[in-house]
Length: 281
Image (cartoon, rainbow, N blue to C red; front, side):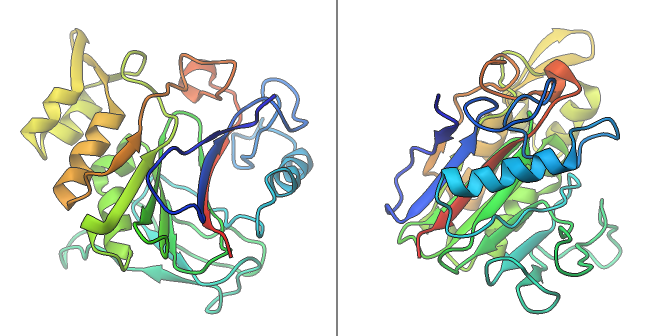
């Protein structure tokens, strides 16, 4: 059984990207069956040793050039630049990218990335690299994973774009952190909660429409105070404003496909898929 959905996008062949599936690999037991790669679920989550075995299988099964750089995702907008494969050490393997400067009196919605030493996942929701062989990783179970590559395959990025991060500017920060002009960047939208199944309330609607009235086109009213939202459309709108129009993917729904995808909205207690991107060394 296939264990991944590979990105279909117009980038050089040395750039590889895919999202794992819940079956076809791994040893996690229900409700995390089988290829759960997330180790930061709730207190009643998967066994950490099992997740680690799944992560080892991930590297071996897909012949990754190194272990992925996992992030401690907080639905924020901070971006890291990884300079080398793991193990990254403080000041040596990564650097925080202060992209899209805030106003002097602005308060960040989440803590800035912190690093406590080898083996500890840094806090961030996106990462970039220009180093071949470095594998970037995003964990999701309904949130939108977005990967980037420039047209000559010399730089890549990956972003975790749940609705909070998407509204707060995680895609804008990721693109700003890249050294490539936006008109030379290509994006792929991985599996996420789809527009026919993802119903939200006024908090989400207001978070986008208050910033841009055109965002209303990505919402369909369902009942008083509720809408179905198209995360893919919202991401495309924001990327287009940045000058990125070569956007692929955006046609899969994690909620409505339980055979292939984990979904927090559908199942509550569930595992996490990984979306990976790297440049072959």
